[in-house]
Figure 1 (cartoon, rainbow, N blue to C red):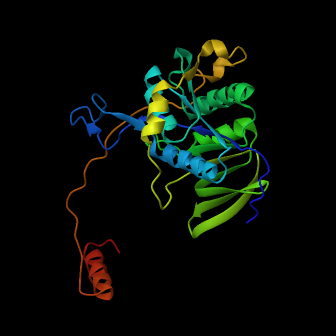
Figure 2 (figure 1 turned 30 degrees about the horizontal axis):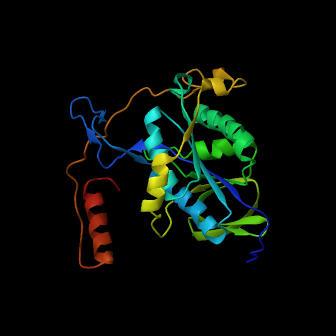
Figure 3 (figure 1 turned 90 degrees about the horizontal axis):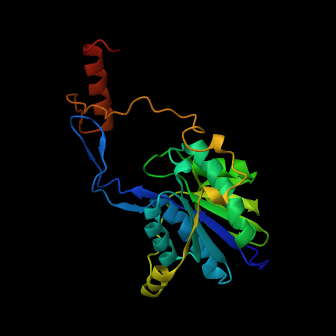
Length: 275
């Protein structure tokens, strides 16, 4: 690997505050999610993206890490957590006109916000995102941001490291792991690696409490196309949400060997007239 240092890396990590899905319960009557009293957390896949950025800085302390999120004012708590872990500064995109945005509208808004932040922080060499948010599981926002910004992208990354003028990415594929080199600037989405992300240190936690979170409101985007934001800019329509019924019954077949189990299964299916 070529470890020649080219310049200071400027990394942006897109993060989201999500409900802790391990704490969500289902209303048995309405078949809807009960969100009241459910704590909010940093989206786990975004924490993997933040860890990837931190590991690059471990090898090059001059690396700058910025985090950005779109959400309500309470998302500042999550952004301070990111500063406590690894980020240098944080930006929050927040406003009523952004509410109700689906993945397409969200990615458009964030792409405009990234351009706005670059006016202050400089051009980002790398934009890291979690592969998906656990409250939506669409895996669309990261790649869509890349399309809006015209950036090459790699999805489902496990690890990333600077290699000369390229980013070397270890990408998860069906057959195992694929190694890809990609030029800067680029966008990468991350899935769960084989290691756990770092946690905040006491020193960084104290600094995070004092940190200023820059809030970008509607007024900061005079050139924003508002027809592409919020509900008006969201072609996705949710017609119905429901909890799949729990299946009961069935036959469990477990013989001494796989061959015997297969023969038994064939016999049962034949008796039922299925085959």
